[in-house]
Amino acid sequence: MTIEELLEIEEIRALRALWGHYYDGREIDKLAELFTEDAVCEFSAKYGGNWTGRAQIRENYRRYGTPPAYPSLHAGTNHVVTLRGPLEATGRWYLLDVNTREGVENPLTIFGVYDDVYRKVDGAWKIHRARLHFLWPDRVADKLGPLASAWSDGD
Image (cartoon, one colour):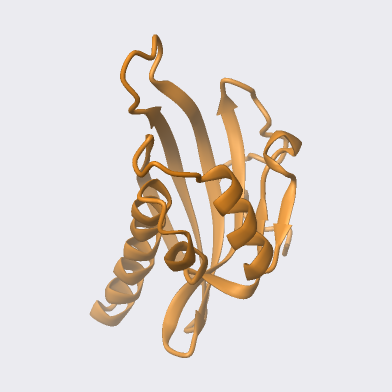
């Protein structure tokens, strides 16, 4: 692996870290700009199913991400990024979502695994596809397989 490839991977990791900061801070317009125009977010039906295109992604994050800022923290861990070429990469990372409001009995909200496809557009990495496999409290992970199988189906 070259230094240039490591720098590309680090840019993608920073992109995903910004996603958490913007969503939790309720900076939804900045959050939406992290996605390609034709991006797709794949969620369970409980969270609106597939969100297609930046406009719908912005609208739905705005609906789920109402103020105040930082009612929860979306912590991303174990981020593995694979470059597929100069303009595309895939990634997998763990989502640990915790409620930060005072007085909640159980602060744990969601545990899941994200499988992502990233595209480089006009020199900047963007999220092109994001598939969230919910593991807890509701298990909706029918497409979750070994790391090597993530996005091997070409979608």
